[in-house]
Length: 279
Image: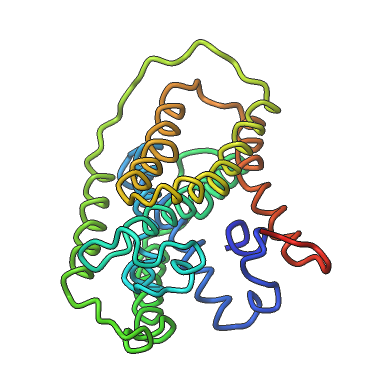
C-alpha cells in the first residue's frame, strides 16, 4: 500500500490513515502480498510462482474490489481514454491489461523485491493460524469492497451479469493452480554483469515507457494492436529479461525496485506541487 498508493501520490496520507481506508488497502495490498509469499513458501515453489500470482493480482483489485474490469464508464477507464475501446464479453480488456501492468510490477514485484532483500531466506514468516486468518480477512475485504465500496452497476447504467464475473473468478482459480503446479525451471543465463546504476536506469526506463507509450499506441485506434503492444513490451519482453539475467545482488535488486517506482513517485510529487502542470 505504501509503494503503490502513498509513494506514487495516488492516495493522500490523510486518506490513507483514515481507519476504513487503512484497513482495506493494507489487507488488499500488503495482506495479499504476504499471502502470496507464504503460499509459495508452503508449496516449496520459487520466483516463477510469485510472478504467476503477480500477473493475476490485478483481477483481485480491479475486477472484484473496484469492478473496473466491468464498468464501461469506470473513472480510470475514462481518464485513460479507453472508454468503449476493445470491450469484449463485458470486460474492458485493454484497460484490464494496462492496469495489470501496474499491479504486477508496483503492487507485487516492487515491494516483494524490497522486503525479501531486507529479510532474505525461505522460512515461513507467519504461522498457520495467522495465515488462515489473513486469508479470510482478504476474502471478507474483497466481498465488502465489491458490495459496498465499488459503485453499483446502476450508477453507470449497466449490468456486468454473472458471465464476466464467473470468467474472472475462473481465471483467478487457473492462476492459483498454475502457481501451484509450476515446476522449477532452469534457463541458460546471459553472461553479463550489470552495475547497480544500470539496473536502476533499466527499471526507470520501463516505467517511463509504460507511462508514455500506451497512449501513443492508442492513437492507432486498434484494440488488437494496443493489447498486443502491452503483452509484448510490458509482459513478454520483461519476462524474457528476468529469465535470462543472472541473479541480482541485493544492491541490484533494491536499485531495480527503486528505478521502477521512481517515475511514479516523481509524478506524484509534481501532481501535488502547487503551480506545477502535469500532463
